[in-house]
Image 1 (cartoon, rainbow, N blue to C red):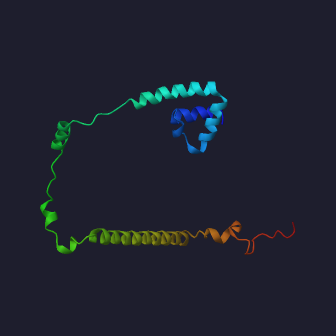
Image 2: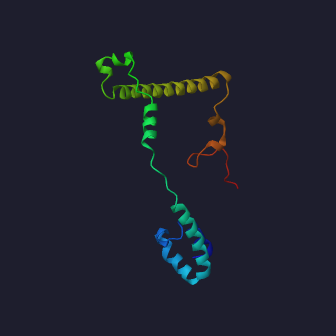
Image 3: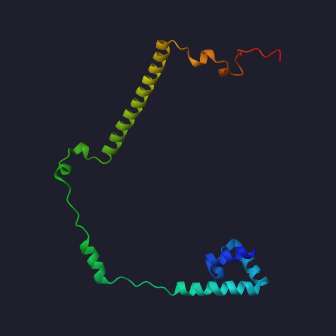
Length: 156
């Protein structure tokens, strides 16, 4: 236990050793016994702060104050007429969330597929129209160790 760590424990948890972390309580108490004058000064300062914090109290709210707050709360509004006249199959519990969520996720999946298809078709048509060879057909650095290389390095 260092003096800095003892000060940090007392600053964070107060002068009462019962509030100190259990894993460091024995080491901190031993350090305080060995360095009694320094520990007493730190503990006295922390005890003053603990007493000041413990002296603070909050009174319960006055009953009239509580009644004023409750009276000022807005009254619940009734549901609109359109919400009350829904068909029975729309009012089944969870129907909207399950069916609506399923529909949107399917539409999103189809949209991503369509966008991917259009991007691929655009890339192929670009290479066919411009006459530019595809990058994989001319670069020798795009080969793997399992395929043959374009350069012969056997003489090196």
